[in-house]
Image (cartoon, rainbow, N blue to C red; front, side, top):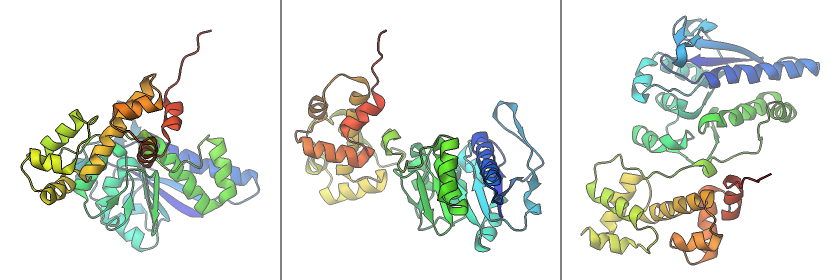
Length: 326
């Protein structure tokens, strides 16, 4: 049987992550019992104090305190909703314990922005990690040695697992159920909780907001120019001349400041505008394409799918719903 330690951080944490994990893993045990098989999970909420007060006045009382857990098989780190640096400071006591448990063979999984606490252990250094797409830029600034990916819902590397934003944590739970209990049980639990077992990307949900939390004023002005003139053809040479910066220097500074090349930034701004048109408007695909500055339908479709994971038509069908009048 695998012992699961669901951490209850100090401060504000995701009650959905905490109770949702316990509920889903408990249901796995029930399904296995109905099949005449032994349970897989022994589950404890593990905290630093006997109770923590959460948003709305909820009180979470851990089953056991951290000092009581000498050995565990899987550590679950829920999303943390306090100010991130303060939350990491408030939960420093977890960090050496997580490292020690991992070095002793435990797997570690983080949900959403719980990845910030996981990264504070140093265990993500050089590895891929996922978090909520809204916090990717902040994550890159705090943990530049981690390969943060904003498109994936799940990453798995060397016994360390991370999930993307919000409710995508259920996809990681199903992934872990498959690892510990088998594909057949994972399929059954995905049906019981109505979870799309084949969802792998959070790209269709991303709203691109250019990284401006930097001090390079020239690059900020270049970003603002791109965002106000995205329907025009903008080149790197044009921007370099406009801001009196050498081309190579501009490209280097732009990448350092925004984590995108100039061309990538232009593409993402254009595609974000196209997404909004497809979500709310009545323009056809060609009209949307021309309005954001593309003239080649094949190139537009290719870039759109690369960024969103969907074709323009698939994206429109996903988000634009026409109300039928009875």
